[in-house]
Amino acid sequence: MSARILIVDDLFPNVKLLETKLSLEYFDVLAAMNGPDAISICEKGLCDLVLLDVMMPGMDGFEVCRRLKRNPTTAHLPVVMVTALDQPSDRLRGLDAGADDFLTKPIDDTALFARVRNLVRLKAVTDELRDRALASREFGIGDPLALAAAGDGQNASILLVEDRKNSAERLSAALNQHHRVTVVADPHDAMVLATEGDFELTLVSLDLQGFDGLRLCSQVLSLDRTRTMPVMMIAEENDKARVIRGLEFGVHDYLMRPVDRNELVARVRTQVRRSRFSDTLRGAVQASMEMAVTDGLTGLHNRRYLDSHLAVLFDDAALRHRAVSMLMLDIDRFKSINDTYGHEAGDEVLRAFADRIRLHTRVVDIVARYGGEEVVIILPDAEPEAAHVIAERIRERIEAVPFLIDQETREIHVTVSIGVACRHVDDKGPADMLKRADLALYRAKSSGRNRVEAEAA
Image (tube, rainbow, N blue to C red):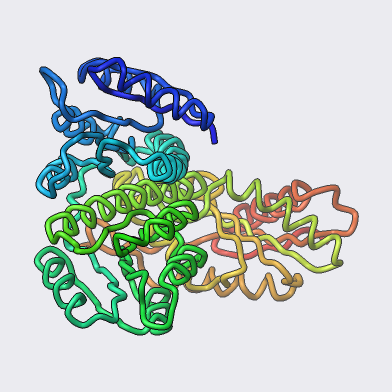
């Protein structure tokens, strides 16, 4: 696995030792001898993970970590704090600063490599989300990184899988101060709850009675419904081999017994915050995807969506010798609505017009704003007669009920003209059908409006 690891330590021998170990595992290594240089390297996007020494003159490792995690451009970077200190209070201070893990000198090589590979793998997923989310800014969504980094990692729904009653009570008591905890002893029940519930983190005891807790972790991480949910292990001190195995296949974090309640709370907070960071980025990506193919005013599909899907649908209909029809709708005298009542009233009419169309079309139909006040509806498997009936029904519903404008304080009557066309066997493509629908619409307009016209025979 190729990744760039930044080693931050003011002692050159420490840097060289870690650099040698990591290079032998085929990692690329950078070094910084102080906090400001480390922050500068991170802000330039030159590394994938930071191994950060705590005890440095000037700006210590805790402060470096806090600054990295507060900056939206570097908050996603995994930070592993490295120190000779081995007190729970020291680990807690590092985790409170935002560190993703805490390694104690002398560093165990197996644990180091497992942790680095695990965090680099998670960071690669986050990087892809970040790149795609940043593209969403062109749609006016705002800064997704700042929004994602603002979470505090509190008030999460947590599933605790523990069959030791006393341990379950202690762990849930510590977490219930900040989160909502559901305790389950049976691993099979836990799997059902994990897939059916809305949990943000699963905490699994590895030494469940008669069941391998590591297998449960693997099952949670393998299912589509739960694969993005953080999973943490609780293990005995003599069970480090299984902890390493868990980290290798994707478990996010672990705790050793006896569990320090403060460290438990801090590690859970870190995982929840990281998970919400990724979820926020996914949300931004999804929103940008929807906005890319959705008309912002009406909520209908836009011209881009219509162009990309119509050709596929048309070709499929031709291949299967199935019917496909098209309706082209145009609001009658829409310019006079804008001129008389204002453009805001025109927008209200367009939104309501789109809503009424949705009520009288099927899920399989494509409804897209074609431009201005024109809407195109594609009707798969609709023969000419059926398409004409649908068009007439829409025309009647538009005419029957007045449209509300000026924040629903006034009513105006609106009508629509509709052109209908169907696929012909000799059509070279959807453009031929589109042209006939446009000509039929023109005839409906020139024949008095508020009517449905089919393509010429």
